[in-house]
Image 1 (spheres, rainbow, N blue to C red):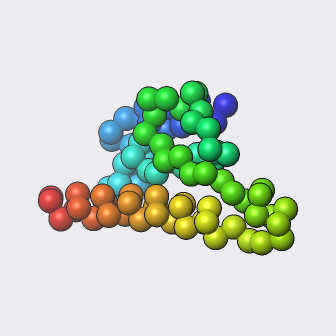
Image 2: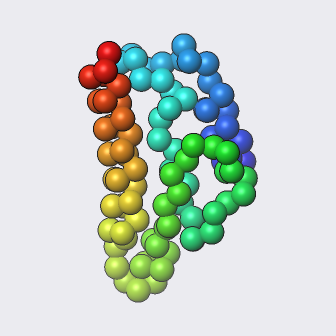
Length: 88
């Protein structure tokens, strides 16, 4: 189901954009996984993040590892967007 939604987002037309001009079909998509690559996402431009939340919650901790991986994926997206703006 989620892979279908991801595919629909990637298939949006280039003209479908946010107010600032960023295209919806290029927003970062992050898939939380337990370490396995999920076949249903093959061919999609997604970031795979190993989700350690469950393991860490059972140990009584928060999940800074997962959140830092998500933060890096979003930072990469922002850097690419800034580079595109600078190029234009």
